[in-house]
Image (tube, rainbow, N blue to C red; front, side, top):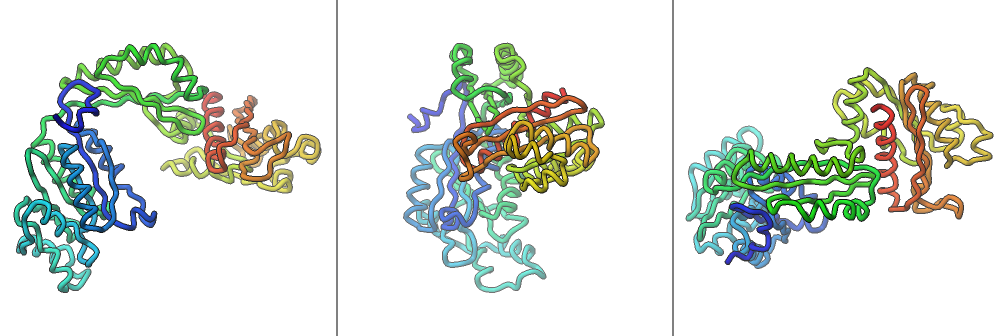
Length: 424
């Protein structure tokens, strides 16, 4: 019996993969592992489910232990890293010991190395050593790098060792590894559908959906993916027939929308800034921002979308009361009587942004992001938010402290949600 049997929550033929990333730099935080996230997404598209990601140091015994565990657990083991020309790169030697083989010189790999390095890096003994490859495996050339790929098979399972440089890994995975895996393994169809929900704490949402969730077919799984201010609900269906799986997902999605109504505001897992941008472009409207505690992060999200110059005219980061007065027209009386963190202030800020930047709509924020600066009346985490479209203004008070970074992100998301409601 496979050790992965616990992962068979869905009906059908399941293929499971484990990812092993190698390098001290990953474990000390010097380099962020983006490879695993990319591999997980792409493998899922072809019906291969990643059940574990393990990072280990450049130590032979630790690599061997990770490989042995993964080979016992998964059908496919994908490794990245440790294939460079320096002494700390020991993956090939370690795999030779594990699979009881040796390194041999490959003229074909050497020719590829010469091509890749031509007129860029002088050939030396270290570069040439990368043409030493495991004897008893399928060696796949890397057209964008000097480190080749090693494909081992044992007891019906596959282990693939790839370079850790993201662009090299993506290229060899896309062009060589995934097509070969699809050819070797007959896998299920996996389909995801994500619904984005507002106005629900996770526990309250789970309680409301409990009966529906318990009645889901065995081939459908629900996952809760909370973000500050919103929750994404991902339905995953698996089976042999694509149309049948899609039909089940559609039926359960309709039931979900019936239960939650207008709380479901997106079905494509689209970032809020893109939803806003699409609406603004569709309606031929312009937007501006007036930010205090969010420090320009809302404007940064809006302008991160290609083509946002079509609708975003500008933003004012009014951290001090002086700037709130001079650039946004907030009255000194409002600031004195109500304070910078108040509904009255964000209303005047959002009006001021629309006037100063001549836009159809705007959002504003003012609050105490933390970790200090709070008072008994206005504790850390208190944020007032406003959104305006033409003559209509909506406001909300955010009053839960989740730490500075999350307080800011949540305020930005809530500002987008207020504006979405106005635009719709």
